[in-house]
Length: 570
Image (cartoon, rainbow, N blue to C red; front, side):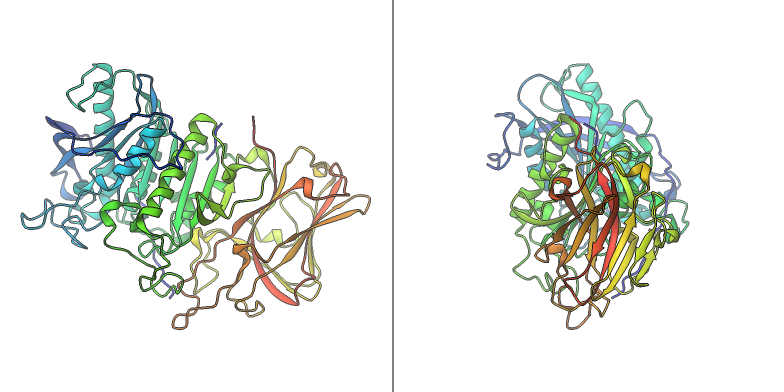
């Protein structure tokens, strides 16, 4: 199965300039990490995974911004292998840029003797173990030298890729030569290099995006990407600032690459959630043949995913739901357990045809995953979607994507195209683009379906993404929105399914007392309605989809998608 207060920034777009790297090996092996028991919520596939710290000496990496001067980087990390001798997909974990030499001290590198280096790769040892327990070969790499700002922030991606290249090369060599001296265990036949997943957290996520594009079309490439509170790595090596309109291209991923992005709701670091562009670019791609998913993890923060950051909690400034180190933040252990379960299940879906309610096109989108509250968005292969609106053109105010008429009972429709900044001040992850529907009294908005598209029996659900517009005064503060979705057939029969105001995504939170809605996020979450819920209409001749707002006097919704989805392929 293939799936895929007004803080404003200008994102830098960078060109990949990959330098060769030659490892200098001084192989040592230190089995200092002792695996803990597998979380009971993760179904164990292997009962005795091997999880070990490795140290292969040092490696010289280079950066064009320093005149290709060599940087000496440790060649070390954590490796995990399932029990047994068969080949397993390889998952590589890239940590973020944090206080390498102590809290908030990111340079110099190496650290002074009185300030020991913090190993953020070891902070993901729990994830390496969870993946190995689930049947994956997994590795977390020490990226501290590559991520050090003093070596030129614009060359982060280049430096990280050199380390990823070197580690993959060493794994291949150890696998083919049956060399058990490098990693302290024989790798012969135990890694499937045709199935490689990449997990990137924070700055490691920005690098993962770049590396994925650089590997496209190569003999060894990346087959699935997971971005966890990922940073943009704004500064490109060429030093050129990119416009907002270029962000979609910057965050684009290969057509056939499964991608998921995790947005912690209380993230105090990545407050603009730039990597949501990876999701938005995927859903707008007509050549998309893989799944893309976005998960808003409620009460999660930036550093809670890495055990090395447990003592330094962050929270989004001015966001009352999680600011000032509220006790409502997820405990780091809970956040790490959640990531373990999400990550193993994500790669099970990608590599082993696993299942999850997140990817079930026929079922309502989940509001909870692995015991934590979430909001989600899902994009499936474009050929499995019948798109009515998503929106890419101002013309969609009057004519939908299929060519049918769009009729509002009053002139209450406006558009914001993807990549535009239309709602200031408020955070809009990925500048998702939307149709704003305003309504007064018993208004409705009708999307006519041309005859050649009226037979929708091969589809499983009606999918929309919607969020109330917090900034519109027509919406009552502290209340929730409700509306009806109607299908009408050519015989005039109609069937309505009411969207419950109890959905978390339909709530309108009260603004911050000090900052209004500036630090809040507008996240259009998926709403999937199984077509079986529309009774007494003929699904072979559906002539219109309608939004009906009879339950409320006034309001305004932002609608990012309207489409029918085919069922999941067997």
